[in-house]
Amino acid sequence: MLAKFEKRAYVGSEKVWVGKYRNLQNISHWHMEHEMIVWMEGCAQVMVADTIYTLLPKSVIFCQSGCVHYIHTDPDCLLLVCLFDEKLCEPLTHPYQLSTPLFQDHYNVLERLTAIRQELSEQPRFFEVRTIAMIEELMTDIFRSEPLIANDQQPSEVTARYKQLLDRIDHEFYSITFYDAALFMNVSESYFSRYFKRQAGMTFSQYLNVVRIEKAVQIINAEPDLKVTDVMSRCGFNTIRSFNRAFKLITGYTPRTIPKGYVLNTRSFPAVQGTFDPTLAEAELLADRKSVV
Image (cartoon, rainbow, N blue to C red; front, side, top):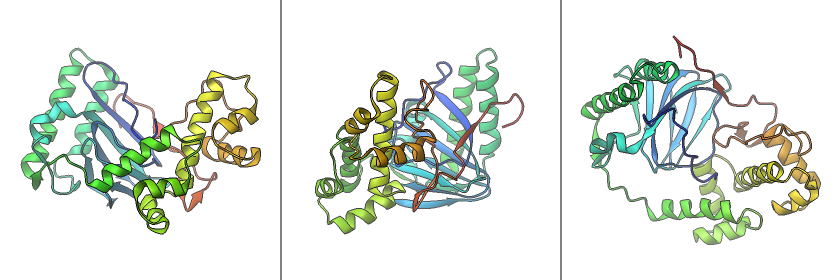
């Protein structure tokens, strides 16, 4: 489901995941895990709760669970991303939240998440217990020192409506229109166009195409002998030309050449800058190593 981040497949009971990305691009989404994004190289822009932050050297962004966000980076940008179960730090994050999600790395976050990544990769005895303890200690250090505000955990009416819209797009992808979406948000079409692009990091039509192509990939995997025209019509495209173009732009393949079992990773896909540009490098989740990030 595009509107919400897929449930992370953890190694064991530790409920923590750390990955290193090059050129990470993702769509507007939220999830019930906390997310920490750490600068390594290059420049990244992260939208959190309707505000765009620039991630620069020695900086970190903490995105509390349930908060709408997306990430766009320069092609050579490297980020370390950690997701962990919100319950691990509930005594901290339930009553409080950081006054701003962007803060300077005075806590050796990069080095500490690197150590957690190594624990998860090597899986020594009791690594789950150790990993949880490391996350709890890191979060305690951050929340002790950074300015805090009360966590009301109640999204604004507009944000709540936007989340509902993403759910609706996911279920009505084959028929929903720009007009339908603007009407659902109860705003003018011109305002909705600007609002959606600010929230999602792309236009409504671009987002809808990503949703439709994800559905097309699922249909092809489930029914590989189905005619391309039938897949096209099920996903809401009017012409085979527009379907093939969107499919190639988003997956890098045509509907007939896509590898068996291919899964569209909606967390990371070719960057959107004005329009889809298939010449940009795809986001890359770098392999784990034993001693370095």
